Length: 177
Image (cartoon, rainbow, N blue to C red; front, side, top):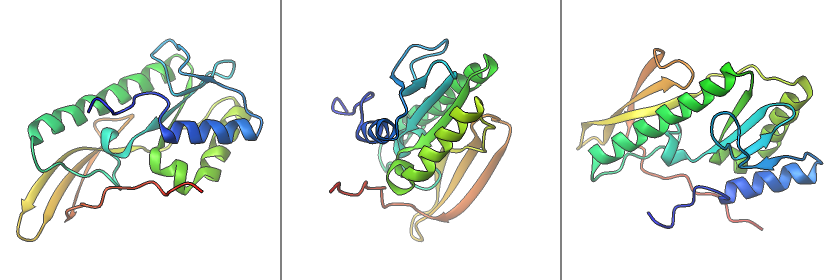
């Protein structure tokens, strides 16, 4: 746990490098009215967060740990709630918030860059639905089935439940170069 980075992660560095290459200048971890997002465009009031699939409940890649489930469920809930509070507070103050999953930096970097460019050009961005896993429960161990509880980041009242085979393959970033 002590080796888990909170700043300057590989996906962050990769995105910042790509932004720099296309001529977009930003601030890293600059203070905003609510926290220090990973990338900040202060003049346009745009905050970019790069969320890790495990730590922030990615609907595609979150893997429920098999041990200490109460601890991890609580940690996941805290992270999602903090993401929600930061996002809503910044948007209330007139900021645009872009939340990017770490896997998107590797699998869809051009789309991520286009989304940021579009937000910079328009000065604002309409938020897209952003689902988060908030709890996973085992349904049937022998069949390896699980029930995933998801919430909308910007609207905790909007929920859905998905049932399916247990996700076990953690997302692995492709090797560079």
